Image 1 (tube, rainbow, N blue to C red):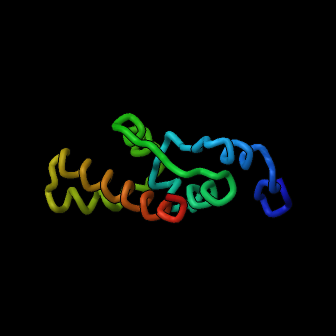
Image 2: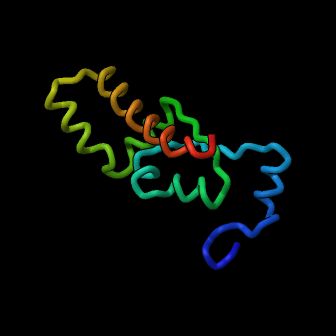
Image 3: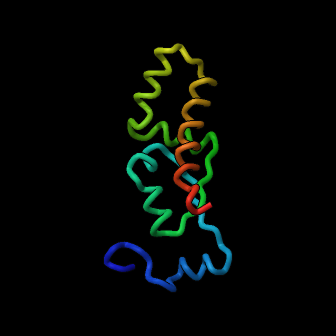
Length: 104
């Protein structure tokens, strides 16, 4: 890596990309979105996608307080579990898709 944290031209990630390998993460979370970590990985590590599923979201919800405000709001609107899950996952997936649009 260079001093700026990016990979040098012709580095291993460049070679993988040139070979047609698409680098994806398997752990979407609001914390990753809010801290800018996903954006950084797109820029510096050639990440072009991110996957999610119920287990990944359950793990994200269990760590930290990134979802606390939205959960409080949903509870105030008396959202049931299905509505809450839909709202939370839709918001995170939409934000990730917006962020990944430039590499799509």
